[in-house]
Structures are given as structure tokens and as C-alpha cells.
Amino acid sequence: MTITTLGNNRFKKLIAVLILPLFLIGCGLTGEEIARLDINKLSTNNNFIVKEAILDLKKGDKIAFWSDMDMEYAGKVDLRFRLKIFKKGTEMSQIDIDPTKKNITIGEVKTTLMGKTNWSFTGKNHQLKIEEDGTYGFKAVLISSKHPSLKINKAELVIKK
Image 1 (cartoon, rainbow, N blue to C red):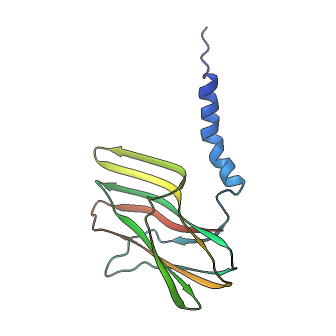
Image 2 (spheres, one colour):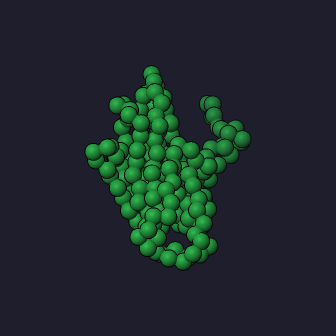
Image 3 (tube, rainbow, N blue to C red):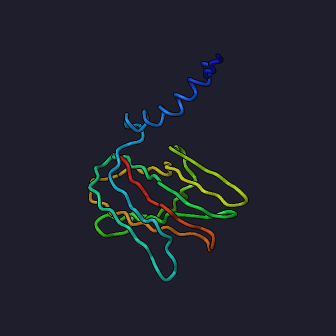
């Protein structure tokens, strides 16, 4: 009878891969979700899919913008969340966020086969420090260069504190 076991180092790596994401989420290192803009479709010149969140924020709050994505495409794709930030109804700034440019990634699965890519992930893309107390509005759309093979299964902009 032969018994095969994982080597000690391979077992530790397996545990780390399975447990670390749960630990990061569970202990709050990724922040607390305070809003989710479930856009989930591309905007076009004739049809804008705008999602909005209104948040009361305090001076010194640090908020982060995360992308929660699931998409399919062939070749290369250029994708952006266009985010407008308002205070008291006045536009303060506009930020273009490339969801594929992330500095923290959780649960990424990317496969490319015969030129077709399937890619899903959650990633931190941008951070902003609030300069003064107030009610802030966040409006976002998802835009892309013309790309007929692009299929968006999920495209959500998540705001965390």
C-alpha cells in the first residue's frame, strides 16, 4: 500500500492560498464596504448606464474605490469607470479608473485560450482622502473603446472606508 501526502512546504502554500483571502476579508484589512455601484453594463453614446451613491463623510475619512469584475473578451480591451464626485450638488472632480490597474487583488481568476480571455477579480484601484465634512455624491459609468467581443458579466464599483 502506498500513501501519498503533500510535502510540508506544498501543504503550507495550499493553506496560505486558501486561508489568506478569508483572513484579509475577515479582519477588515480591505475596508468596510459603504456603497456599491452595480453598473454591470457598458455605456454607449446613445445609452448611459449611470449608478449613484450618496454618502455622509467626515474630514479625514479615507475612502477606497474597488472594482468587482467578471468579463470576457478577445484581444486587448480598454475599460474605464468614469467617476464624478459631487458635494452639495456641485461637481468637484472626475476620475477615470481602469479596473485592471489594481494594487490589491482578491480572488483573481484569468484564463486565456485561443485568444479569448475570461477574467474575474476584485481589486483596489484608487484612494481618496476627504477634505471636509459633508454629503458627497458619486456617479459612475462604465466605458470602453469599441470592442465587439467584450462581454461584461459583472462590473461594480465598490466604495470602502
